[in-house]
Length: 237
Image (cartoon, rainbow, N blue to C red; front, side):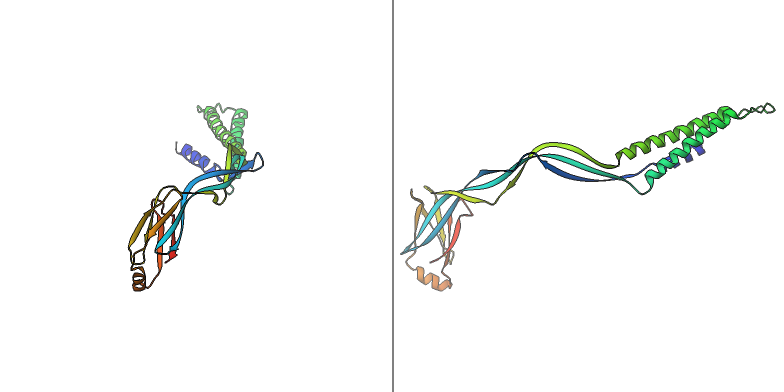
């Protein structure tokens, strides 16, 4: 039993160890084509001081982008290599075990039986020879399988459409017909006004505006459209 355990451990130690590296690649199936897609609307605002008020112009900006599309076939490329000399050792020990087992069987078959003793070792020798041959054949089969696994192999992943979106563009703009704008003065005071049907809003300024600006030491105010945090500008009063 102990000898069998030692043999099995030796067999396991001789098995090849494979390492693999996986990469993905795509092969185009058609020339690339450009498709314009709509990205939705956003609000934009510009403004300037007009006497005792700030005039704001609010527009609805249509955003779009050119998207490059191309159908391609995907592949998963697996590159397998034997770790060190493990595959060579698997071939070597498989051959040695197979040859040794066959040699034991052949030697037992041609050896004359000693009739002066009551012990016949032939059955045991045949059993050991068959077991060693089977282990060797198993190693050789494993070595052949591992050998076929080495090298590069492509696994198809199917077809898909590759998309590459270009920079955002403005495709059009129309005056906003509703909404509310807010003007924040340098001292934190907030003034609001409604947008009319032409997209214009007039925000009345306080009578003491110049004193407030002088007190704060700044004439920079923030004009924004409520409901869209991106629709804001800074302007001088």
